[in-house]
Image: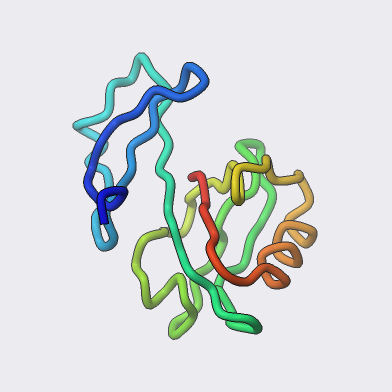
Length: 114
């Protein structure tokens, strides 16, 4: 699929790196003068657990723990400490339990902006 190819697109004045599954951005490749985010696409079955816990920090909603065997753990696309900025294009609230519930209740395609 083409969106898996690594590319940089300018959208709303921000740079986005689209990262293929199993790859992570190399911090040495990032330009510190611009804001870079990752967009991670997942497909979540109804009732399927993502296998993450979230917490609120001064930076925003952060992945606090990744549970072995959950969707996120199996995919290997996210890490503890990643900040979730948006889900399916909507900014996340500052309440981790609300974001956790939203992710739990969502099925089908998920696009996480990290």
